[in-house]
Amino acid sequence: MKSITKRLAGVPRQAAVWTAAWATMAAQAAQVNDLPGGPGVNQLNLTPGVTRIAAEQYSLHWMMLILCAVIFVAVFSVMFYSIWKHRKSQGAKSATFHESVTVEVVWTIVPFIIIILMALPATKLVVAMKDTSNADLTIKATGYQWKWGYDYLNGEGEGISFLSTLDSSHRAMSDAGKPAGDDYLLKVDNPLVVPVGKKVRIITTANDVIHAWMVPAFGVKQDAIPGFVRDTWFRAEQVGDFYGQCAELCGKEHAYMPIHVKVLSAKDYSAWVMEEQKRLQALADDPNKVWTLPELVARGEKVYAANCAACHLENGKGGGAIKPLDGSQIVLGDVPQQMHILLEGRLNGAMPAWKQLSDTELAAVATFTKNHWSNKTGKLIQPSEFKAAREGKFPGSSS
Image (cartoon, rainbow, N blue to C red; front, top):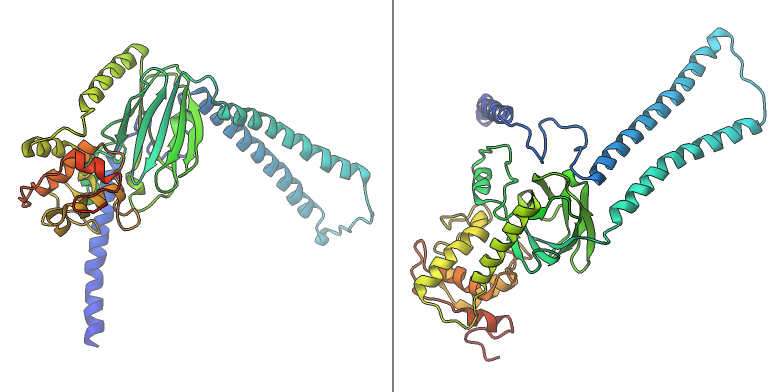
């Protein structure tokens, strides 16, 4: 009896907690505005878009909706009228006829015409969506758990490559349960940059599980499948920032895998390409170079902030199921074990592999974690060790 009384006494308190939580969420939602190039508040319709394909999708959507609504109203009007007009209480009697060639011809031809009216514009649009020929720019988008990798394969900017990850401040807001800003969970550290008015071909693939590259404003959604290559395209007709997300459930961090595309004028895009090529050239380190401990720690801090802080947090304490790095026995222990995890991942992708980083970046971030927070091992790992590890030659191994 006591335990039941205790439970009942806790009900009002729990209800108050839930009421306060809902009130907080409602207040936060009221502060959110439409995001240009992204989702709108209480949005029900498709995004009108900034490409011809998106505009045609929008028009086709309305044509199909209106056509289906007219058919619905017509069919059910006739049905309900017939039920009402020829009800038994009014003395109506069933007609006695076996067949009607006229009726059969009509109910065959009319639906056939309707299907043709629907199929022609839909087929035309699908064919246009799949026509990736004569692209001005070709970019490969690779899905990782949980970020996007972009490689500029052809056109202006060829050779540029980078990772695009959720901004660490937005992950921190999510962990704290305090969302803020119209672009909440859509801000990234490195947006995809493309020129306005140019046909951009996007080749999609994945490194681990199935992802999907989707930007509603471009009318684009294409699966990214490990071991396969798919492609799509868009031609943005106005400059600005446009947002999307991974549209395939890809694991526990699926909600933290946004897409941000920045469309620039031709002049601004050329300037961006020049700056990006200079930056990449500066980062193209020789893996055989011998680094000092302070140099690796300084470089590793930047790599950690860009790639690791979203999960392990800036203080290295981790969160939820994510293990802390501060005081971690893996970080403090044998060098080969940490190198294995960085190169191959762990727990079936819960800790993703980081083979896409350079040998220098891997060595820097490993050295940083061994010599930051309360970790003061004094140990460092040289890029050459990661270069050898990619070939299976880990420190201390006999291979």
